[in-house]
Image (cartoon, rainbow, N blue to C red; front, side):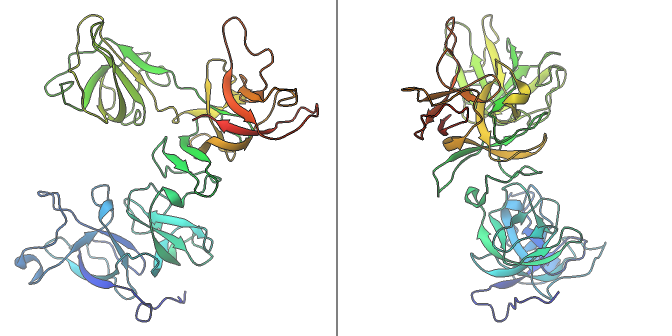
Length: 417
């Protein structure tokens, strides 16, 4: 393909020579990252003269979880290399890369079908091409060319942009996770609020509320914590996992399945519970798992009688269409902007003007402006919803003026957060 990008004539373009230690062939547009020193945990700004001759060098390789934050750039035209199974950090090859700068036009290797000024893609772990992937690298790309590379990976003209939550489109679903589950996004144009969510079995639709169907995953007396675990000022706690715990009730909790969820640590009747958000967890083994939390513990975990630890899954990690779940014990956590199947990822709207399927003449009765979610994720008004001390979940209020009796939904000001 003939490209319109010429690095010799493009303004503000910076290229640099780096040392590549990988064995694969590199061609124009492929992505690389700086290698972190395994001993010091810092970038390899210098290498021994015996390795690379003399002078100051940078060392790069394929992107990994260890180095993706140190994204270096893309291979420049003519700056690549052939494959070499014998290449190592002691025998690198010099390549030329284009250094990331805001707005710089660049040729990028991708496997996506791209639309000009619409498609946004990122460097991804384990690949030399850019694609759809989690928000890990500090840089992303926006296509400035419409071309389909989904059949065979190749280059597309794009510009460097700073990666961030602002580059999302809440009206699209993802087949791979792009953001943290539960990530909050406020649309700068509308002020609408969204939460990034994973769709469970049954899928979601855009007309019924999406409900959280995850129960309390574990509630037990704390087990013996072990050295350095559950200590004052620490960030970890050991939990018991019984055979009926976990989302499926089978005692299975995968590594990091609880991330974004919550843990309540109650040290008996004499101390108030510690509430923490879970940032990591080990796979459940021998009925035990270790959770890592976001803030240090203000008291050590106690295994005395009356103590307990309760674990709750991320409320946005198992969302299902309310009309599918039809569960009177499940709460709506948001409205999907698009129909999505199980295993995909969507943005759920939690606040702002929204249309929701109505189960009654919602908002059509005089002075009946409040809206409530019914068991199936549709909304209704407040007539007859309170009974025997129970009440339905508030959804928001009707924004439009409509005195008719047609059973259609009003414009709802969604107020879930």
